[in-house]
Image (cartoon, rainbow, N blue to C red; front, side):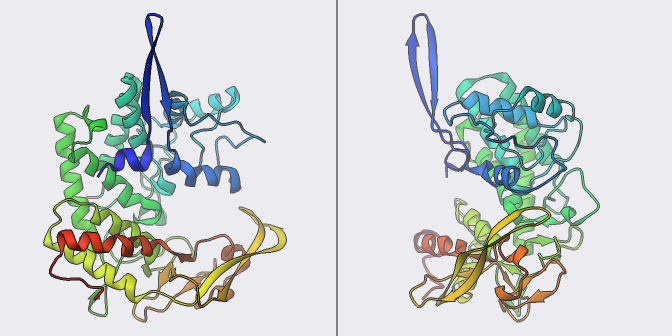
Length: 390
């Protein structure tokens, strides 16, 4: 599985000769893995950002590979990790660059919003093409950061160094666990962009991957005697489902779990334990489908909230032709769809959620459908004797 190339930094290299020097053009760099952070930089109010976007902030073209990679280096902290919620394609002003250089030693480094592991994967691809040592050095520092931040139980927190809040939890939200594990799997699978990694690091990555896999298996939720899926986050000590933000409660979380199962499905020659894990999660996704509704975004009176500006609202409407949909959260024990407000009060319909969260958070998801679509082929290859959807 070419995840390092196809999911993070796809590009094709076109080389031609101009006079006596080789001229290289880079084509089609996919920065999709950075879009979550970029969205927050442009659309979410955060006075804590070192730099904020200026009006009509220009962007590098997708072909300007080394300029984007140089941005990645600029944002990298001295501990090897990255902060979240910036746009790697933004053409920064000199003032913005100087502000970033001044806080290189600030350790607000994180995996949240698909941060750090996506930077590492992109730098590996850039080095593979350019052979510029600065990208190799930065990539190795990022890998060392990921290795250092793993708990002994195999999980990863949102932030490292650890902070005194929910970010200490072992986290699946925003692909924290799976994003790191995919990078490590690509290294172990011998993907060419990671050929520069030395044997000692490969051994550490092998141990970290094995430990991470054991942690994922251990945290699959057994609800009422049946394996289902995963929670968004787990207490880093006892590995029990935990609260994160005030509206992110312990639950069976289908959105993040879909990413976990897709990762597990990508493993070549899965063990019986992994096969059983996938089979149970697929059965859960099938059982937790919701039919006959869709979520509609409607125009609404503009309101400026503390962190964002809202011009829309969301409502659930009946639609007999709608495809299956899932809620992000299902209540442990009852398996009822649940929602929540910033007061941490659990409610049972989207209409009961305050508009600021109703319109500003992803309460419904179609992500499990991708798992169900991939299941028949996976099942025929690795679990021929048991189709849980029949």
